Length: 75
Image (cartoon, rainbow, N blue to C red; front, side, top):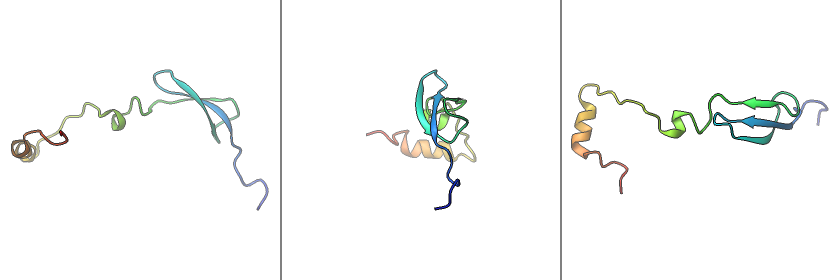
């Protein structure tokens, strides 16, 4: 193997948006540095479900809801 081509992995502290923190190994920054996340699984709508509004374009959403009655995903 070629010398000095691999990144330097070291431990850093990651702080999530709610203040929880954990230690992991990364190539980010310098050893012991703190990485503060702006978006994480506890705050991002992709993981939390979000409060997005569905737009009804051409009545498709209303026809879908009338046909299936909002029972999608319920057992």
